[in-house]
Image (cartoon, rainbow, N blue to C red; front, side):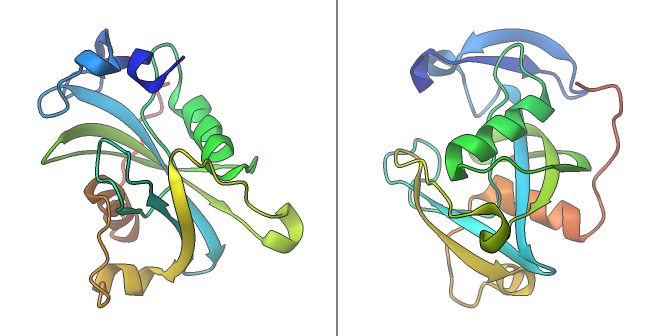
Length: 177
């Protein structure tokens, strides 16, 4: 199935399912959808970031502070997070649930679920990047991401996920699949 044929679950402001829509028909400015964000730690305060390919519809060429993506119809947050980590980086790692948050900005309205994991090249082997989505990966300290002295372009939704994590603003919603 191509990305444009993907069916996305729509939710309301309370993160309750209100329907499904093909990705190509979705209005990302108005429709609220579910997204996973996986913080891939390579050290206590160091994250693995992904530079998005130039063909991405949302923020081409920007750095994603997390791995993850849109939750498809019939898919749980947990399955989506595992699927995206394997698709984008070729990793199958245990994920820790950190919590959930709502965010919106130019081109997105999201209920996000944040996960974390630890990647060690010696233990887990080399990364296998998904060529159509990931141009490169870099490691950055969280403080450097937040200070952003290098003026890198970060995807605003993944940066917001990191801010919620760092500022301990993630919430627990145990009944949301």
